[in-house]
Length: 424
Image: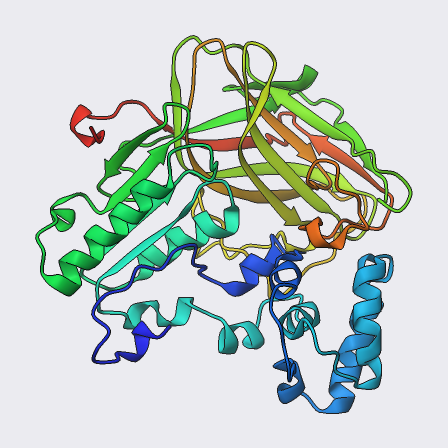
């Protein structure tokens, strides 16, 4: 955002883990996350005051707080309810002012565009930019890709590195940043601008590789369809079938999380998935809102599950702008949620994190669908690690996968890679 102001002494930037839209980071698929709560817990404030206090009158602020307190998911969460309650009387606690702003703005709109939006300034950046971030987290990968594609700098580069800290990550990142700044700030010929603009770490084979464009030109977009008996196959069902089903129980009553899984047969050859991933799900619920979580797994011959990518979507945020959407990148209209008519079958385009992963022979690809995805062993009341807010309502899900409702996952398959793109 500073680079867009064109300060004369700023010659190049190297932002990491950036976001295209701060709303998307704090409301994953329209679902509240507690990321800012955790971050602000480490920050001391002496004169804490949220931005909302400057935007609204005291009465407007109280009204917004009361509206949020009526949200059943917040009302049933003791941390959130007790945090918001004092603000109903206009009192300002000296902690978490940013998280308060986030809670008060559950939909996209002017507040997000005027405060923390990167998207509007991308076309104003004309200095060299090297953007980077980790695989797996949708807010980092999809937002980072949008920012890279829309940035107008003549000299821009993109890197995706592994999220798993056990893999060799830090030395490569430090060396890359030094090469970047040595080139632009010291005039040292490090060769970095002679390389292709995109550098990715391919998981599974655990190798670095260059690419020239995004999406990768040789991508073979492939649909795998959900089928009866929990199968995941290239061909859709050809007849009408009853749906699969599971139930979400509020975490205040049960910690058990039901799910459905769909799995391919064992692979006969290596299969690389590199790019953006979307699951198109036909489903009905018996409430006016709910949350969908999907995770793509690699199932090893021993039966171990390795998470490759994950994504989520609040049912009322399912509406997309068709004119701005691509099959591999839905453009959600988070500014105008549309409540669900209970029992009605809707199409839910669920965006997953972009990924680069090689599935090996004898492994299987699995898609899991559920209503909430907490960290292992973390209960609903553990605010610090809750990540996304679970629904507080008992909800029955029907997942359709028949001839009229071809639910599927769209995968970016890379058939082959020229040897000279692999980094020796």
